Image 1 (cartoon, rainbow, N blue to C red):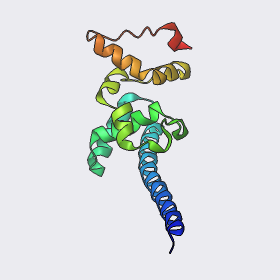
Image 2 (image 1 turned 120 degrees about the horizontal axis):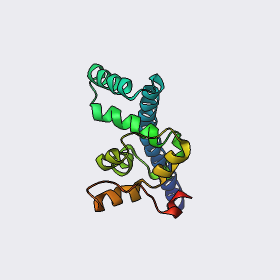
Image 3 (image 1 turned 60 degrees about the vertical axis):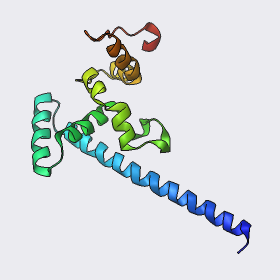
Amino acid sequence: MNRENYNSILEDLESILIECEFQHRFSVIDGYHQIGKRILETSSDKDEINNLIEKVSKDLKIRKTKIEKCVLFVSLFPKLEDLPEGKNISWNKINYKYLSKKEQEVLPAIPDDVRLKSIIQSNVDWIVENKRQNQKGINLFLPYEKLL
């Protein structure tokens, strides 16, 4: 086999591996999204959802925080196609970057208002940074340019 053929095979195999890794990571993300979506479909009452999360956690032997993060994930990204970062995304990255403890403190209840929800989602980083600077509370008066 000559060098050119080998390099071509090597490139093909590398592409296959990259696509397999993406599909694996995305199937995990999709599964967690489906879990969160299914739980949110049961009720709009926060107490009922929390009770369901508690029961499901015990019966399926899954950490309660993982299920809560699935629900928060769907609240932040109702459609998977809205996920940032394309093929570089993973559940760990979503968990660390978007669902961390600080974001949960900032977003204890996602509002029903679609416009307000999208403003909050697009400014999570700014809100979290503002919270760090002002430990007494969050100034939710976003600058005007962030509301556009």
